[in-house]
Image (cartoon, rainbow, N blue to C red; front, top):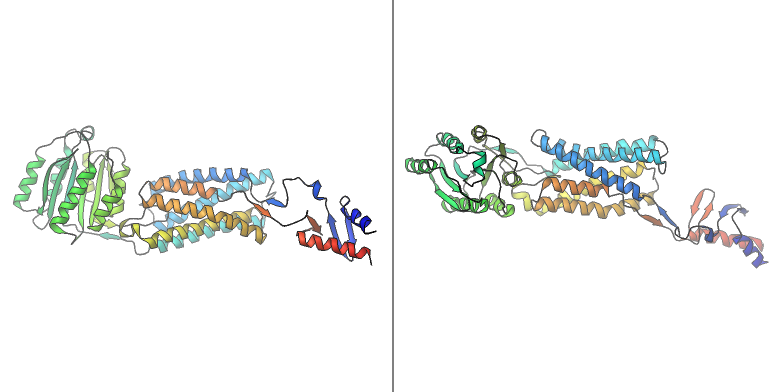
Length: 447
């Protein structure tokens, strides 16, 4: 009788009622072998979509950064960048999933809460974290008294300034200085061709510099590393780091350089590098200036050089979550950890919003998604920090970060211990609960 009852239980699928317990059973062998209790939350198509959106967002944000960086507050800049990423990512998910009808068949109130709530939360968090991260940063106006002029005389400058107008522009600035100022001059190519060591700008110093400026020349090579290293060390040997010094660099930037070594040397000795790039944009010149608290001026003609020289009167060490971190805080462990933690939290909130948009409200599903995403979030944040820390390229750092952020929705599966799925009403029950249902079924047959 017991064997007969056991065979009846394992035969086919059906509705059974026993002792007030309603359940359905399915033969384990009828389920595809690959299922085995695994339930997919995200698939490859969704991952690919998010990755592509991440790349597109990175492109748009890099354009946004390049055009608005010095025009709007950092808090608004960073918050808008993160919110734009959330908006584009959520929008792409909603549009594709409504068409596929795999996770979203229609856009309801819960989806809307995830969509708009996620964007607003990301915006607010990004603004708050950027405010904390950049707290204490400000533009300090400085009336520089000490100047170091480093002028590129390499052959590549001939095309940009064939008539040596850079020397005339420099004379204009020097005419406004007096004995209260300290001035040094370096002209370089492959080697330092001529130099005037730092000294008070008295009559003797004026004559020596005037003589050099009357002898325009150009030669092969651009050893920017040698020129800056020599100029800064000469100044420190004579005057130390008693006050901020304005190092004015004029070049086309066509040179390799150890950005970390030169920027750290300048920062340690209060040397602010204000660079003027003649011709095409130069990443090297731009980074040298930003890292040391100065600014890079890209000019097309030498008349703009005169205008740029008149603006070199400020010191600014900026910090933003998606860009470089300049000045003494560049190698600070506190700010390294702050960026990693802040960016990771923002990215995880973004993931949570996407989960709610997709209608995944089960706490176990949300927990699994968040834990799975945490690895990629931290990896993306670490790469963002490392690329900026070693001054590789801020735009590249943002591109890598948002591409990886798009991969936060990695495919994963939820595993449940079971002996084949069992259903009580409309609820999936665990393997242990199914075993109890089977036990109760058998026991009832002997009563």
